[in-house]
Image 1 (tube, rainbow, N blue to C red):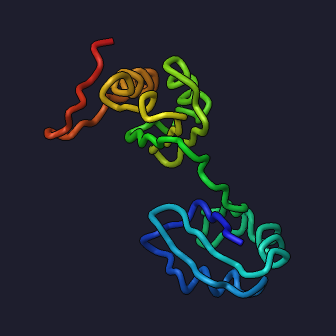
Image 2 (cartoon, rainbow, N blue to C red; image 1 turned 180 degrees about the vertical axis):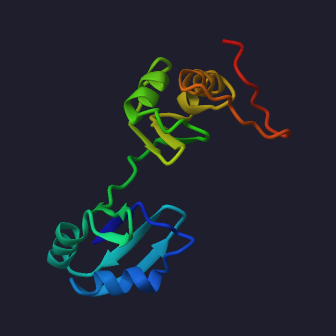
Length: 159
């Protein structure tokens, strides 16, 4: 069973540390740590459910409560858009509302200044058409200017 572990400090947390934490609940098959989240594969479904119940909210580091839940597969035929420099004041629902103006949104999450928006087709998710203006609107609403790299084809919105 694949378990999602959020609010992980990837620079300070090792796969071995997470595997040891989860091994109390069942056989850990693998563990991968990214920047701010991890995936832990536990062999037994019952052990995975016990781990989720016991470790959700657990502080691996002081002040960093883990988010532990069953991993949800990304819906098929969707395109995920990364939105950087999102204000801490911007909620997932606000970002979702901005993107829904231009088409359906399957998933939308904001985690520590980064947004991820999934849309059903590539055509709807193409970055060169509308998202720069959406990012600009979200940043202006929060009082922030968008950061674009010099080589970026995206330009700040005139709105």
